[in-house]
Image (cartoon, rainbow, N blue to C red; front, side):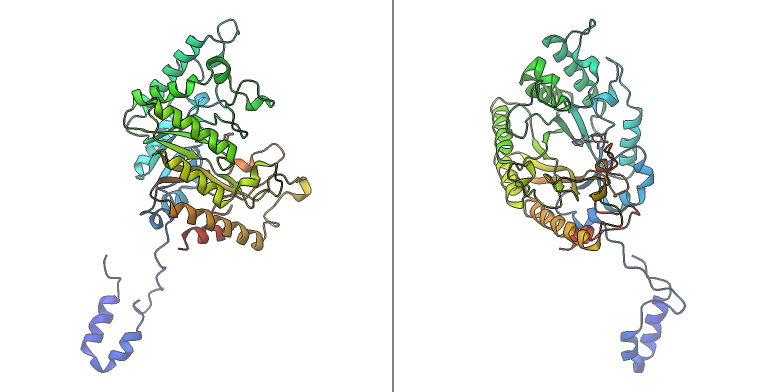
Length: 388
Ligand code: XIL
């Protein structure tokens, strides 16, 4: 570290004029005519450097529009959509890595780690994957071959650049059952399960490991704090490990809300610190690492009905609400720090409130779930997360 201009002359003056020693003690370090220096800017990732990497989901725009925040506060990225099946293999055997590669290059240029998201999911997967040339459901063999080809190609391509993969995403439903092709809501159905049963989960991990034996392989899911879901995921992972399936960790998405649901039948009822702690402890008891993979905190409480006139705006996201959000942020990060021995990464699903998937619903409802506001200024939640 170099002395600031002016500081040297102040010291020399003091050495020569011992009579003024007491005055020197209170002399400001800045030289005459120099503006006072700003304290060094606090970095979230640096503050957490002895705990775990701090990540953000990014898109091809945000690595430019949010570069200042990203480079100051984060040392890991996840591509929000650009490594999903539909982004990389739109047509069978035609792989396009252009966008994802540019994001990986950005991360490398800034010394950031990269998490890969996600190889197998029931969403954002092209229709061709599940049908044959006549439009009938693909056979088991065909689907398994497509799964293998996709994973070997993608994981092979990013070998050495992506250190951890969300291999399989969202296999278990909230009631603790395997997600099937017959779920009530169309967008909840898994054609993977419809054709392959549960076997695709183990297969996906084996292919990923074959393609990159050094990559850390994760099972990723949401609402893992619901006891039935937590337990079902645990049983599945335990069984996979017993079969020798190469799985190294569990991703907790952690799309949270500003308070747990007041409705006992709602999933959000269990969204508490003790339930999430039980989840971390249960999964790590299997010897698995745990990562928080998609953290954000919605202002909307699950189980409460909102209408256009009760949607939050900049104006109704009051300081009181920001303080409430900050308190809950602080509590969850305290929990994560407490479990630093098993938590190997915490990633936010976005960077600042002007770019969050929670504001992308058709209803036009806006949300304010991240640490930085729409003007990229730190919110009270930021202070709560670094204030320890
Ligand atoms: C979301 C993206 O943020 C959106 O841009 C996209 O339209 C839909 O997917 N769980 C996941 C993520 O595992 O992949 C999802 O990302 C959010 C929920």
